[in-house]
Length: 124
Image (cartoon, rainbow, N blue to C red):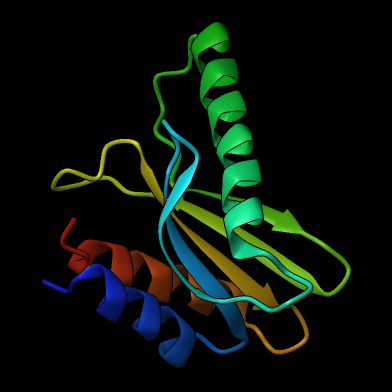
């Protein structure tokens, strides 16, 4: 089991092209922990904004009567991938891992694989 700080550090060190990571509570929109980002990229603002994305998708699935679970949500920009992975186990209800990747350096399949592994080891 890994704690939050260790998990966020692992996101940035083990995932090629990772630029920023956060653990976010989508019930409140608050980032519980962040690592990375820059002066031009406010990770707290991004975390709060992506809370709306998660809530909207969950609401849409409910209206459609879909009984599926979201594994992850991918947003592609011209130079970045934004990956949102909902936490499934051990007290993770209402939380997601948020990862920002440099699309020129990242391997999206490997990033998803690594993020899944980090999620499974995260102790919330």
